Image 1 (spheres, one colour):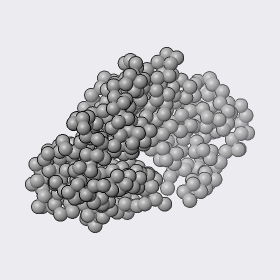
Image 2 (tube, one colour; image 1 turned 120 degrees about the horizontal axis):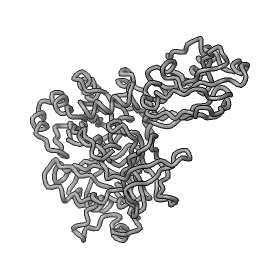
Image 3 (cartoon, chains in turn green, cyan; image 1 turned 90 degrees about the vertical axis):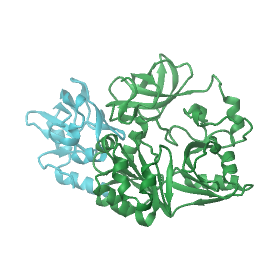
Length: 363
Length: 131
């Protein structure tokens, strides 16, 4: 038996199929993964993301510490509430985790890290924090629910504490507002508009059931994965890990090279590989033949092996199979994928595949 | 609890077999199997005229989640495949024992049907998996 979130009983009441995931027993779906996917693209769905970990960094040295810890630069965050996506690298420039960091005040930053990586992340952060004036605290007392879809904002706002409804209603994209232990961010992992709500665990069941009553459909990890894949968002552990540089995971845009004198962890090995023609490209694939692209399938151009799929699956919106893949720099606009001994044709595209309910690639 | 029609035969690997009474059988995957797989998005069927062997893989079903092999419950020649599934794999989710059938086989030997599970025995297989 894995860890259970505070919403575990509510999932069972709603008919969830529970599966183990990163040490947790989590809902895979509540009947149909495809319907859950579509409801997020067309209306509003909600996800239990309590298994992810909220980490608060407080103190006079928090900003300075994060400028050292993360490959993206928190100095870019000028307005309180603003969020930044970043990789946390090891000394070799490999990715320990990807995360979102929120700037809430001069002495308060909040990060949200992945579930399966939580323990190693906390060990690494604490190890690096030694010389800085910063306190690191994992907020296991908080629950997290993501509400996503074109109608997510309208349906969720009336269920938030009255005192923060107005502020949340005015939130820009990638910004957050807080009120006591409630924290609402206009972020997500689906390619749709929506919120990620952090709140006291004791209030989570009431919010979950309130959202259901307001017509927000419960959605499982299955739909979460097909939605993020269509949105071209990386999955830690599949698309990148400690052996992969962000330069080969489509995450160049998250590395803040300027100012040149900011010495963040992993900078030197990354600098050495920057612009290297041997770096593999991170691309999207659309399968032109029938079939389903899966993780680790090998890719070819003629007889030559050119790379492999890092995460693949079926796109319910495009009704085609799609994937993210790491391929050689010279790869053209099509390739072949080997599935059960057969070679099938795939088009090479630039992710994302779908955003805000619309296809962005030729199929 | 899954529906397990008593007039069908089954395998431990969750295929069902309907004896058509003329030396041929129809094969599909059970209601329980489609529930485990989740929404199907692709079905690869054996070729018409191919010879299939009992216990060997002869088709593939892919759900949003994963690919799974379908094993032929019997030995014989494939005399029909359900081509409708190419465009509508979800039919297997909606009607596993009916319109979601996969292929028909002319048996090499009728007596092999006796080796398959009846509904009670198959129910026990499902029960055992749940614990």
